[in-house]
Length: 290
Image (cartoon, rainbow, N blue to C red; front, top):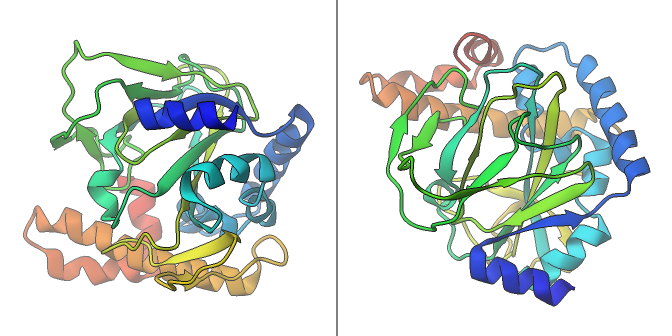
């Protein structure tokens, strides 16, 4: 079974569905997710909790160590594994939000291809509510900015895709994953349904896979790290652990500054990007422009 999954990933770049959680666990996680986001009062955190979520939610930190998932990750990455990121994609019912076509490899600047993304469905993920879609042709792409306000990607990028190109809808039941490599071209449509669609994407990386100009911290989830390319992340003792929130906010300052510089370059004002490091400014930006 594991070997077949890896062979399919090597051949096509992705695999689905992989059952990672039983129904009872995924329903418990869904309930906890909704309860926790109700407690968020900061305008900036209302957006930023979706990134590096394993630093804020204890149950996500536990989930990145799930043995069902790590068993597959080890087959591809080896026994030594870091969790590089965890990201929530939450499309509310009747939402215009979408994820533009993109290839992660374009932006990650990694030394090698030893990275896998596990996209875990917390709710049903289907065509009507804007499930993941994957282009069958793996190739280099060019980008345009398209509907930046509703595009859930931080840079607002959208790959230019011919309308006749073939793609596949990745339909998942709660608790199922899709698994894909960094060179897969993927995106998703708006949620036209009467129910929220929630995915948690966990990105695993091998410790020897250095990056240039991207996240420089990670959490060890299997084996050991003999390379120390990534700063070790704290482990939350409880939800919104003060030490972890502080660490997370420093990461968000850096991330927001990078994205602001990218956007401000277009209007020849990149020197103003440091404003994005301030919590209040980030909150205003997320509310009105993202």
